[in-house]
Length: 184
Ligand SMILES: Nc1nc2c(ncn2[C@@H]2O[C@H](COP(=O)(O)OP(=O)(O)OP(=O)(O)O)[C@@H](O)[C@H]2O)c(=O)[nH]1
Ligand SMILES: [Mg+2]
Image (cartoon, rainbow, N blue to C red; front, side, top):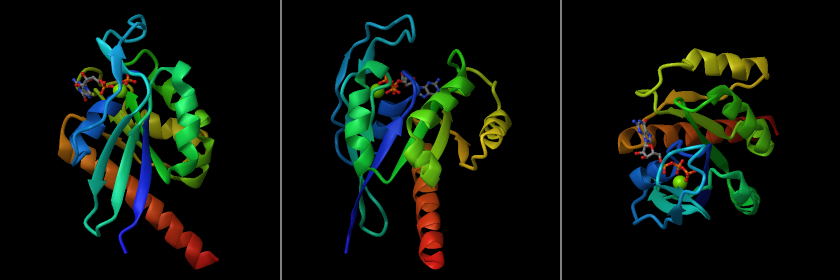
C-alpha cells in the first residue's frame, strides 16, 4: 500500500530551500514569503516566514510531503512542530555564505535526532558563486565529529539535481532501517 512520508528542508537563509521544493513538487508550492527585513544577513527581497509545502510521488507510489523551514531562527518554533513527524532532513548549506562550515555545525546541532539516526543528506548550494569550502572540507568537518553523512553539490534550481539529493536521503534512510531490521 502507498505510504506517506514527511521530509524537512532546513538550512540558513538563502540556501535554496524554497527553490528546491519548487523544483521537486508536483503541485504548486504553498509558500509563505514575506518582505525580508534581515537584509544584513542576506540581500534577497523575500524570505520564508512560516513554511513551504510541496508534494512528490515516488516510483513505488509513496507520497512524500516536503516542508521547507524558515531560515531565520526567530521562526524556529516551526521546526519543533514538524520535526517529530519527519523521517529525515535535507540540509542545504549556502557555499557563498559567510561561514558555511559553521552553518553545517549549527544545523547538525539543532537537529540532533536526525543527525544521530543518519537521516540527513547535505546539499551544498551556490558553488557556482563560491568554490570554497570544497566538498572534502565538509567531509573532514563531519569526520571530526564522528559523522558519516552524504554531502552532494547541488543547484536546487535544477529539478534533476534536487531529485538526486532527495533520492540520496530516501536511500540512506531505507538502508539504515533495513540494517536495523536485520539486526533486530
Ligand atoms: N547562482 C545560484 N543561485 C542559487 C543556487 N541555489 C539557489 N539559488 C538562488 O538563491 C536564492 C535562494 O533563495 P531561496 O530558495 O528563497 O532560499 P531559502 O533557503 O528558501 O531562504 P529563506 O526562506 O529565506 O530561509 C534564489 O534566488 C535562488 O534562485 C545556486 O546553486 N546557484
Ligand atoms: Mg524559503
